[in-house]
Length: 120
Length: 298
Image (cartoon, rainbow over all chains, first blue to last red; front, side, top):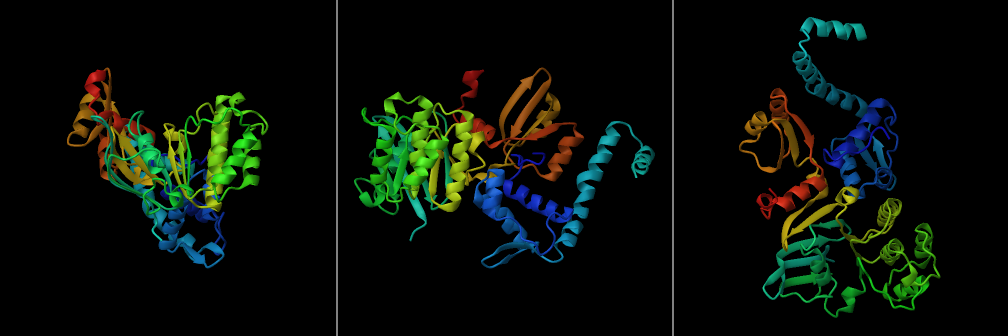
């Protein structure tokens, strides 16, 4: 599997991110049901309590909501909310890192801009 | 009902002047999976023997299901203890062992036991003494799972078990635990293999409690920086270093703290590489250092 759970960070954070990725990518549209904590636990081979912690984190952030007796569902507006959050992180996570690596390699700001345009 | 399945307060066990378990206080809560970890001779098995009333404590308090465990059937019928080297009567076949287990454990599921035996490929009619080491371990695992005991303890349950059978054990444990929640204590040296299954980790070292922590919070708790020795030294000064290694002018140092963004940027600007420390590595580092064995090794 390409996206395995790793030991670098708490697993509940990684589970929450997987669900977020699925919502952003369209795999989990709004108002659809997300897998149960036991399904997550079985799929990733993790403790169900850990999976539940990840899911509950998203409930607290109102990305997911609970339908009593049925399960967890993706909240309306969840995708937009997550996109906004990820855009904020984008600069720190990708742009800053890229510029640092470019400096190390002696790539100028102009060359970097050119590369971005070439790709687009 | 109390959610405390095991409560130890200043629990100690001495043999003459040797303190096998030294002033350990801990709580095992209901329906969680615990890892009881530590080096050989750390005192893990002694603690498990006291919980299961096979050893008397020297001092302190110990309650299991809120009662004293000794000769207490209320407690002991709720406990299943799978030991590394369980002895069986010579004449017993595998099916005799299952029949006995059915008498001991109120929640015993005979159908599930047979299903598991087949999965582990243990012949039902074979004599226990004719079983291979791995098959003996598999019988123990089957009993531990099918007992569905409210407190199930596995002490190094998989001597001789191959990787396929171990991973079968983990899968079945998680599946059955999800259906029938119960308290599980798993004592093992294969920390990397089980760390994801554990909700809570207890580390015993030299008879003392070294760590008692939610497992997931130990992930990302420590990290290793690597690079030119002088730069690594300047980065780690004032930090709690739990392990270091030197290779020529290169050094790697493991730091016991979570990596925060500003520190990460600082390390990057110094040209240092960093990597997370796994739970297994963390425990190895912690149990190695605490006895200042380092000088002895060097």
